[in-house]
Image 1 (cartoon, helix red, strand yellow):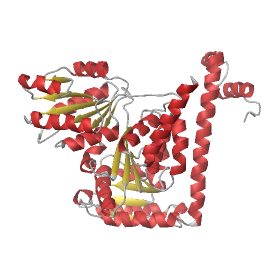
Image 2 (image 1 turned 120 degrees about the vertical axis):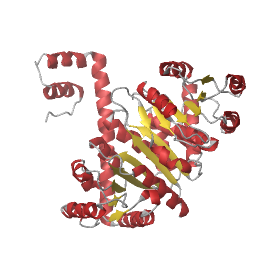
Image 3 (image 1 turned 90 degrees about the vertical axis):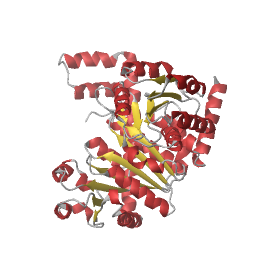
Image 4 (image 1 turned 180 degrees about the horizontal axis):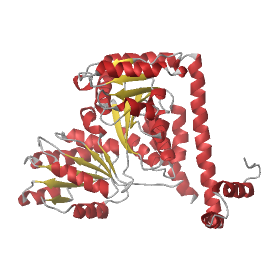
Length: 328
Length: 135
């Protein structure tokens, strides 16, 4: 048994060593292990963690059809011209009905797949809101540890879990397109608050200037962005127009991130990560223990019969389980 | 922690086809069967397909071809997979492939060749049966 554990540990050590050396197969395998939450995942992450923190993490979000994947394709090409290595994590939704997913973001980036300095990975949301943010964060960590200079995360910017993912990014690029009717959608999805840079893509279409001025108007109402004024860039990704502007702004934002104010934001992000990890672990440990004792099902029954509400049930269960628990 | 492994499949179109209805139907069938399907799009080189399989850490590659170039492109793909130590990935093919070519393709490691009109649930069954948990 202990010999077995020893051999798993040495396998993990070898795998992590190869990731740090940027071996592509090891990167791919490691992402699978952490994405699937396999038993080795935590050990791997703890070994990789010291090697992370060097990459600039960029989130790209925006409604379906705004041209995110095409823009990322061009962005990566330009970054490669500037001699930077790039990792891409492209997230697409899992079907809530079948659990399957069609991951098609690569189509627009396929010419990059044979470039040694680029690693693209598609991920499905797997209908697991909390877990998705974790899986994405872990995949980014693997790419970061492998020495990529820039890591781009792509998600459809709809809903809370997407906003959670994008929080991982240091610079958030929101991509919109004129005529999609998405100005209102963007406000609803909370994109105006999270964007550090706005791109109006498909700028060869009508109504571009209207879209730009609408974004400006929205941004001016946003008091949190006093220090950094989010630029609005016009781009036509398919013709490779606006890409260099975008990278220049991304770099400018990165410089801004090194200032003191933003150091605080970094601390906040680490805080969130720790809180999430505690929530996950505490909930898992308490729930599995309660299930083993049969108390979980007992309370489910009581709740179904309306003898108790879920909050009071949680208080009752936690008071028994955790010594320092105070009902709130 | 709970582990949730899914079957990951690439549906790829090597060479100069300009028609991918069949490949998309197959991709859709796998998705509906609960798998994660990466679609590469048209006109892929063998290098692109193999590199995608590597980065995406897939369990299965489905190759669709209509152009008649399968005897050139498929051996190239299988050779690259060997070089990159990806022999444990299940590979099958579909499209317009004459019966007389099938034995040669099987010999280089293509597990099955499906002709036009194959019901999609046959494909799904085949993939489920032949996908082992990879290391």
